[in-house]
Image (tube, rainbow, N blue to C red; front, side, top):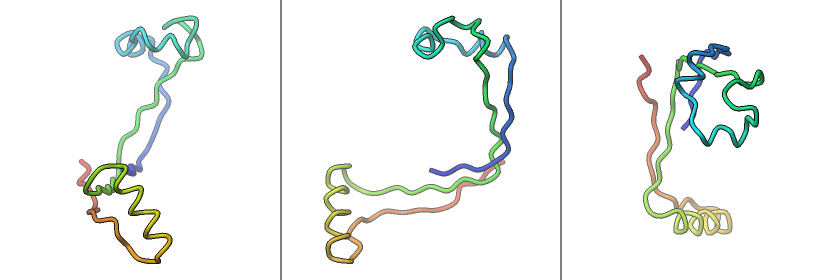
Length: 84
């Protein structure tokens, strides 16, 4: 999926406190009070998706075969999503 839109950096300690979980300490050794923490808010404007049928391994093999033969063997669908 690809999403495009407008982004802004948020430094709200209240929002960081609300969203914080124990695994976040993996990246922020000083915990939720680390001054390096910020949030990114994205307001989406466009979104596009691709979805393939079958398992990842089968599709990987189909992609290799497609590249080797110059054909398209991977089946799926794609389209735009409505963004409000």
